[in-house]
Length: 170
Image (cartoon, rainbow, N blue to C red):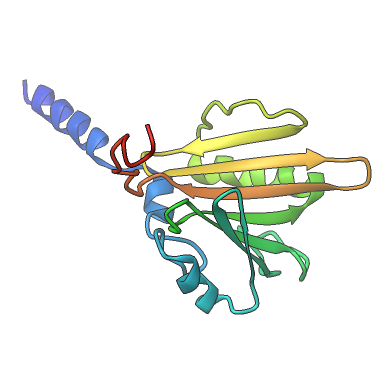
């Protein structure tokens, strides 16, 4: 009879705990904080190159630090991406080719467990892990002369646009 309340308490505690991805990435990455402006991130990475395409700002930084224990070349990039409200919403880490994709896949499976179904992307292999506030995507693309692996960390917890349809032009 005492077993039933214990099982019920265990069941409730499982649902209340955030996932591993949220635990690791909930605040930010590489010293940044999710939601920071591009100006704030650029101040942290003064050598970064800022560009705006299609209403979204990116900051590209050459940074060869090892990530997840995997060495990267000194000219490898970190890419910080901002939403249309100029808030840091995701970061990409570029690696070299196919071997790094396999190493990262094994490492991420070990750290974060079961993968999420990923949407198909033509010409690329994509694997994803997802929690309530965080999505990791591991992408491998190959071309005729080169290939690259990109690990993207996306924060899903930023408040969405609160403008009315009239303010949006509808």
